[in-house]
Image (cartoon, rainbow, N blue to C red):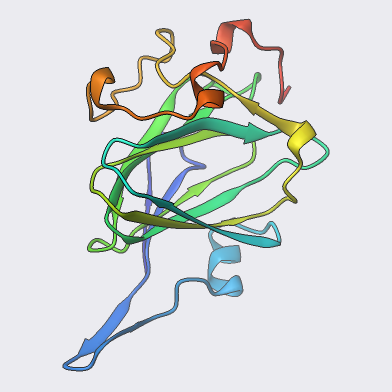
Length: 184
């Protein structure tokens, strides 16, 4: 397993080993003891699977606040995404900064998005499938978000705005500056 700290040390890019032969491959994508050694100690309680039919589907920027904040371990099993985590921990020296990576079925990388970070991604290929483990129960009342193109965040999305597909809900999200402190 290869592990890289991105420009925000708590956000990790993890590449599980793949062992292959003429039949295909085998990979351990989650081993509790190995991930705990990396500091990923929250108990995963749910797996989510999302398929996006079109290139340019953008999901985010989302998070959950207390009582059910979520850390996420994100990977792609088909296609590719540009995945981003934005630090919204008010006392953090990296508040408002982001860490990002391109995840794909080919590169087999995972992104660890800790509690206290907005998360979003944009599909780079059609029929992309994303699987992610979460550390908190889904709680509609704890859902929060920030508009994907917040000028204060200036995220370098890989597609121009006219090529992005958003849900109605994601089109209406506020700017970070208009949000209360979620994580002191």
